[in-house]
Image (cartoon, rainbow, N blue to C red; front, side):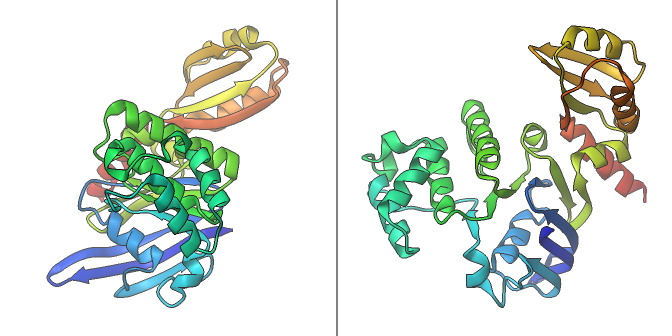
Length: 305
């Protein structure tokens, strides 16, 4: 089932055509990246999905509902972190969480639970003004998690963070998806950094979607390197077999896990070979690829017509 469905979305601000033709879908359970340069229409698209902006044209459904007509019902199932959230600088973290929980009909124990989930339980006595940018983003995610939403919408959550804080926040998003089973739509203009987080991508430029789908499908379509994680009780034996294949670019062994880099268009061949091998295979999982290279190929193909 698709949690988000968008078809032919258009939005104008005065003389500026912010969105011209945005079409994509996000299936339930995915971590989807809405990826494109600054000014491509990412934030406008997200505001329409949340029900804060009215579209000029097109169809939008979130959980099967129109977010403009049924905004409260949609937002009841959704948590949102806006690009530049503002909080009362003199408020304590505990006070802000308590107030936000009460507004949404939840208890302070619910607020404490989300604080623990995002790793700010030790900062409850701090004022907002004392928090680093990274911890402010964690606070925003904690507020978004109140009420156990089925969908998290994160607009440029890593913007203006230092490299370490960016990496920690991206790990947090990955853990939340794994542990809570929440669908995530995260926007970013720093495209390569989401390679280890997203399993689905929507590429947008100039207010138009260029392509969308699972990273495994897109890597195969555009011939970009894919990375598979293979679990086996005999990793070194399997690694020797795989490294001899022409379309395998590299194999890393981590205990009983192999990380196999393979030409995107050859992914089906790798899966067939693994199925036919005598070595015991416990699981095979697509875990990423070269997202920056994929975006470049999508843009290049679009420009070529």
